[in-house]
Length: 578
Image (tube, rainbow, N blue to C red; front, side, top):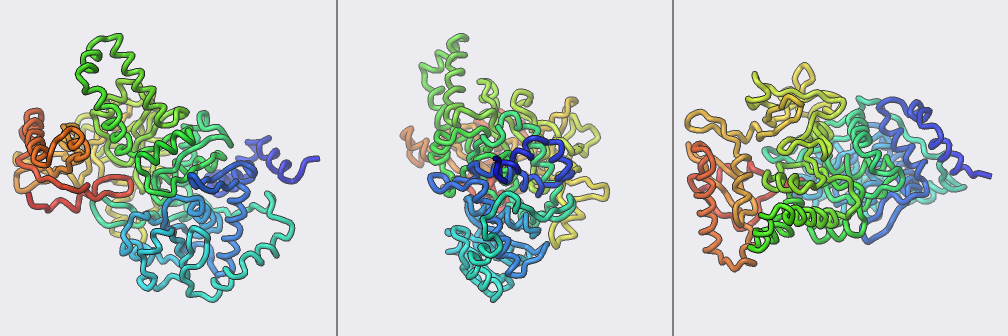
């Protein structure tokens, strides 16, 4: 005889069409509920080299938090903030907030304490879930309206200003036992539904040009991004069997959508690193987990190529062999296989996004046939705007506009004259929280979101980004200068780790952080590195148009400050002395 779990699971699996009707169109919460029921006994979350939770464990933890919320007096629409490194309990708390009907406020754990205070206060959060390393820096008195601060690691109270919250936490296990005296089963999984326009979360941007804004993300945008991932990866991410390593911050829409929510919907097993994602840790995890999909930011790929591949190709004997067509192809095939193995060896493709990709490295990966693609998105679109699969991807582009979205270039000749990229559709935000002026500036009356990015589009619909409108510089003769294009060339020159091009008067200058590790490996001292940077400047000036020539350089000993998606916070350096 089948038990209640078997009956519920088999019924859901037997009639997908009936399920789709049951959850209804745009029913994001229904998809989460269904996944928990269908994958009840499968592994859901693992803290890398730590504890594993199955879907039934996640459901029970969600239910306990629901009881805590209800007893503490939280109601639908109340804000609950989360700030901590990626972990199973972070994911549980996030799902608990949404399925309760509250509004999640994910906060990037890399933010300074003062930024966390500001976001908590600005968002009107009633509760804050906080990670171990964050809790040491925050000052509860700076967030006076919070009713409680809950530690993510064990869901214990760190600060409590509400008697109802205190009593609920003290009696939580007893309350849970009273509600479910004969165990919590699949038939008890029933969450509060939300329509597509309802507010799901407020996601504060990491910001390369200004301070954070609270992006209002509706449920339709979460649903549409999940549906997009299903359309792209359903065939290669097996239901109930797929694996992924969660590297990118869950508090950022890129990691949240494509390293967490999609995989959870598909019954996947998500491994959270729970620590700073150094290259060594990342590739140890890839080797162990062997993920079915890899989501990356350019910096990770670029470091791998520069450290693992470039040195081999620069050897004199290798340069000679690469001139021989048959041998050259065999060498490139071997490099492709080594890279494929380094990322676990079982993925279909690597999606690169979040920042500009170095063109030289992109061209090399395309040359060796490595399965990668470069997407384009924004927090305001939760996040996907453009994508193309790796075997259709046009190098230099960021793919074509995603399903349920429209895109146009604000230009008299979109194929040849750069203009601002405008998008509208199901992924687009509702606006900015408590910021009507910024909302009006960004969302026009016809529903177009003005991205602030500049680009062109070819006749086949492939979008090519040229830079940010706020970064664009004006040359002495009125020529538009896109500093990202110059930086891309500069970053491929010897011992340049990263750079920023700024303008002083009518002249351009480069701020450069050298790759000191590589220089030391090659026997260069500091003075030699500085001499090389000047040589790089002269070499760059020989290959760029006159209006892009660099008048001088300034060396930075430390890395430039970055957002969590590894984009340089350019606005911090625009007024630097050179």
